[in-house]
Amino acid sequence: KNQQIKRAQKREARFSALHSEFTAYDQAILAWIAPEMIKHERGMTWKILTSILVALAFAWSIVYGSWTFSLALFSVIVVYYLAHLEHPKNIEVKISEIGIKVGTRKYPYSRIRAFWTIYEPHVKTLNLRVMGEIVSDITIQLGAQNPAEIRNFLLEKIPELEGQTEKISDIFIRLFKI
Image (cartoon, rainbow, N blue to C red; front, side, top):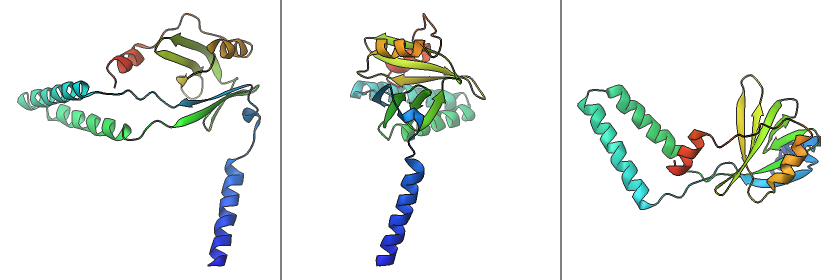
């Protein structure tokens, strides 16, 4: 039994050595903890209205013989339910001299084409346009972090997309608490 404990301790030491490497990304100029996404609170009214809309959509698909639509609707509901079972994780965000680290993902400034911040009453985000195999926009929650401080630092490293606003899809998600 003692040997099993020693083997387990060695495995744990190897695992932590592999996964706790200190890199230049960890030498943060700015750092904060942010939720990976905002989880909206849904009241009983939201649940009742959503259930009615889903039931009507199912009824419509059955009446008109659209079995593929009802199957797709069922699939969307299952995926949505499974995705929202867990609470959003808190991730560590670090802005360093060489790039931005979001959780375990690292984005060197050479891959970040532009950034913009959205700082409105209900929305406080840092957005990055990242180039890779495909162009993608990454949204990072700011929480209590000062957006002016982040903006001033990033202006020295990457261009800012001025005049950007919240995406229509994000507004839709926030308003309907999806």
